[in-house]
Image (cartoon, rainbow, N blue to C red):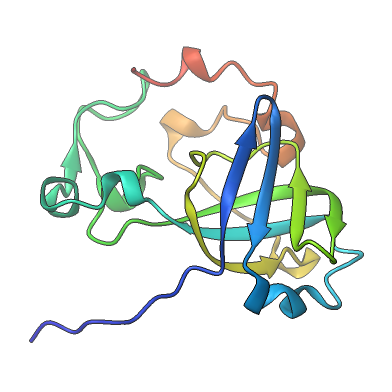
Amino acid sequence: MEETYKLKSIGSVLIEGDKYSIRIKEEFKEGLAGIDGFSHLHIIWWGHLCDNDESRTRLKMGRLFKNGPDEIGVFGTHAPMRPNPVMTTTIKVLEIDHDNGIIYTLFIDAENGTPVLDIKPYRMMERVRDCRTPGWASHWPVWYEEAADYDWDREINR
């Protein structure tokens, strides 16, 4: 039995040159109350560019990472091709314009116009002390701040 769920976009990603922001729809702006003080936020977004039958039925991928396995299941990746293209990104907050419903950030790995489904604060208790990754990924950065400057071209097969 297939279940369906109703999702509603609360806003969208806006990219203007090298400036990134999340624009919240008018009817959801008051949901930003109390968000000040969180340095980082989880942005849940819809991978709308991969919302098609081919992408939604693809469960295995080839060698995505140069040091990774020859084949990897979609649930071992952050790839947008998945049964439900729900994506999540942690962003650093630069500024929040409550009047206009805009969250400014340094970067988000979504496309301009990407629908945003939800926003949640990143909380310190979400850190995991004894986190493990597979051996082929164990040399990747362990902190958000290090990942931005990491040479991902050495890792990802494009």
